[in-house]
Image 1 (cartoon, one colour):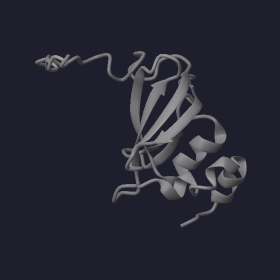
Image 2: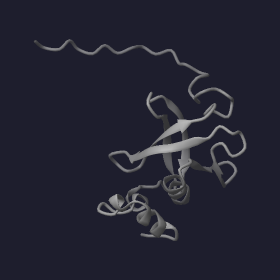
Image 3: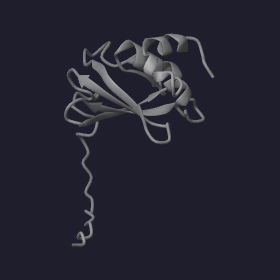
Image 4: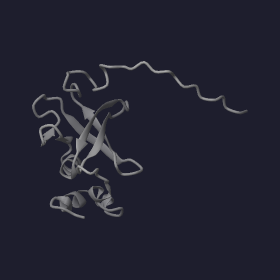
Length: 137
């Protein structure tokens, strides 16, 4: 179902129209949200995870900067508007179930609100490492 603003998205990139608008293909949860994994261009480093509703996804795909929906504040926030730690969109893809968005970015400054490079720098967990079976010759 198309909503206001979707026409702009479809006009911006004709390549999206054969499979339908990415906004129509995305599967949002019961709260109208989908998780967005933010990844550094070039290195593949996972920087953070945020939440997007349909409008945040539209803004992200059309404006060139990442916009999230804040579940706690119930408002949109564009990464870097207050901190200067901007995320410039380089690519985006839905996963195989279309219920998670991967956004590849050029990160300027820290990605995490704590000031660390990524949101995964502060709490490494101890794990038991699995061992892959030897390949048959």
